[in-house]
Structure formats: C-alpha cells, structure tokens
Length: 287
Image (cartoon, rainbow, N blue to C red; front, top):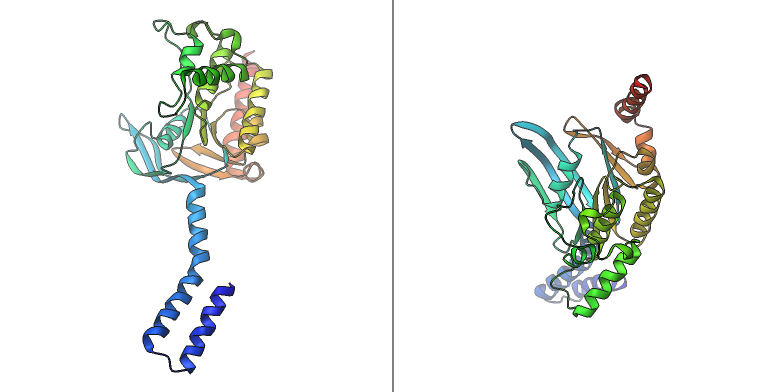
C-alpha cells in the first residue's frame, strides 16, 4: 500500500512539473498494476485451494440418465460427505470426479498437482491372485519416488503397523477378514501421501469399534490438511464429522450445506429423514 501511494504521489508531481507524457503513462501503468496485485494474489490463492470443479455434469448408462446437470467444487481441506438413497448416483459421481469414468456431458477440472487416494466399494480380492498383504501394499508405492528398496520395505512395514496389520503381512489377501481387507485398502490409499482421499462406504465389513477408529483417523487426517470425500449411509458420522454435505436425489443435488443447514432443510427432512424412518418401520413390521 505504501509503494502504491508513493507511485501515485510521483505521478501527481510529474503532472505539475510538466514531465513528458510517456513518463506519466509509465507511472500511471505502474500505479494501476500495483492496485491489481492484491486481487491477482487473492484469485491465485483461490485457484490453489480449489482441487476439483465440475460444471453441468450429466451421465447416462444404457440410455438411463443417472446424473443430470450437476455442478460442484471441492476445496482443499474440505471434509465432504455425499449422501443419497440407493441408486441415486453417489458412486457414479465420485468416479466422475476422480476421472475413473467420463461424463456424458459437462466438464471436470482437476488441479494438476492433485494426488488422490481412493478406497473403492465392494472390491473383493481374487483368490486366483495369491499375493500377500505386504506385496500388495508395496505395489502402490509411487514408482517415481526416489526410494531405496530398504526404504520402501520400511514404508510398507510402518503402514501395516499403523493400521494394525503387521501380523497379516505375509497372509494371502483373499484370506483376510472383511475388516482387515478394508484397513489394507485404507493403507494402500494413503501410502502415496495423497492430498485428497476419496472413500466409497469405507465402513463396510468393519465392526462398530473399528468404524469409530476409522472416523477418528479420517478426522485427524483432515485436521492435518487432507481433503476427504466420502460416500456414506451413516447419518451420525456425516453429521458429526463432515464440514459440508451434498444430498443426491433424482439425478441431481437436492440440497447441500453444513450439517446444521441440511438438518434444517425441509427437502432433506422429507426425502431422507422420513425415508429412513419408513425403512426402520418396515423392518420392525417384518420382524
């Protein structure tokens, strides 16, 4: 600001002292440039914070429209949970955002520096591939990382220990329990140190204590700056840990916002809270 004012004063003095027209134009240009610097810096900071931007996404499969004209942005450090009833397009949206599938229409921009870790839904190991947990995890280490073989082994060992899988290191992956396999997928997603972690219903096959530990770990990662995108049917988790939520219905985002905003939204109350109550009532009647 001081430099900007100084240039402006020099410009005014040059005008009164009959300086050449060209010198006054240069000073005026410099003054204008200095005025724009804060705006340019602010725009650049916003661009760096934005990790994924989707505009007017549509997706069809076998002629059936699953998502239509959907737009959203993912900011660095966000903790976003995607909600929706079965068949609402949650997994489809996540795969489109990550670039695993291509939209039928619309555009997706991803930060070129974005490193993603992904925990898919319903991925079961093939018994025909007799690889053990340690080797499976080592396959996910960045091939461009300048690490010695000893450093890679140490990284894998540390990751297995962190997720309570040291005793399973030499166990074939198809023999792991559901909870062990899910924890191994988490270790796999994080071993490259991503800046964005995407999870599609990661609590499948995990007991209640394991789910609590998973959510605590995700919260810690988010507090350390990692972006979290999660698909979940666990409303309690979504409301307790998420910074933002989007709810999908009929191929689009029917409501979005903070947990407090969604709970107060009549559309969310009618389409989700009431729907879950009806499901619970049906279960009670069936039993």
